Length: 317
Figure 1: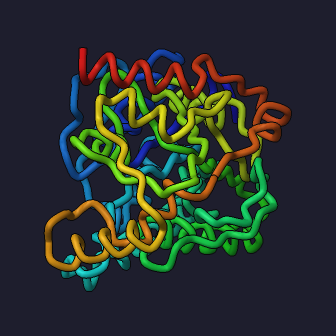
Figure 2 (figure 1 turned 180 degrees about the vertical axis):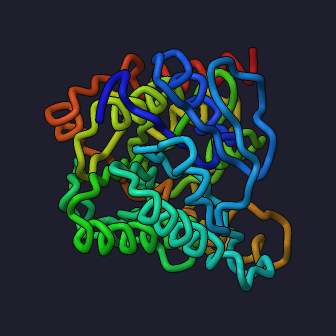
């Protein structure tokens, strides 16, 4: 189904991306937009229905009741990083995904949309520029967020092969920014001093929150099953990103940078990331967006630089 005939459910509807998507879908004149989350929605939204529930529990009856034919799965718990006492958190995302997929199967949902991340490719020196969707997934071992996203993609891939009648769309997004908020990467930029690695200045990509909501909505109303990279046009060098926040960029040799980060993490002087986090400001992860433009006809309104500027104007202005 597509366009005005689609009845859609969105999990994680109270989250940053979920709230933007629900607001976007509410303007599409769809017969049903069902917002699902264990938390209340951030803002009242007209023309939608809301349900508060834990998606790790079966909810196929709810989907059947509202005749849902498309589900967008955004519910995701940000796993804690190593050495932060995390023991069971990673299983939560896999558990909720399996529950959602089973509920979709029982309710005969025809289209399934999942928001993944560019971090599944991992920041590696040998990464091609740009990275296409055929690139093997190689997330950092001690970055649970990327590990969970990659594991979820594996599960979804198996379901897609076992149930070819279900249209499955996976969107691998770069860092999301906008005037209303930003993700954890964005919040980590607002420090007095940010580390860099001497001789390295990788290009970064961003996608505006409205553009991400738009491409997710396109996957709902005009489904084109497949896996797609999504990012704003152009790139912004890491050094420029740091300067734009007003922070000071301290560049160290690799040995000093990794040692300093490891020790500051080990002794609790900073809780942003272990030493491997430096790989994100050392090696490139530039996405090719040719496939999503060709197959889905998606053309972002904002460039990476414009998305960054919108975020800064909203948080600093």
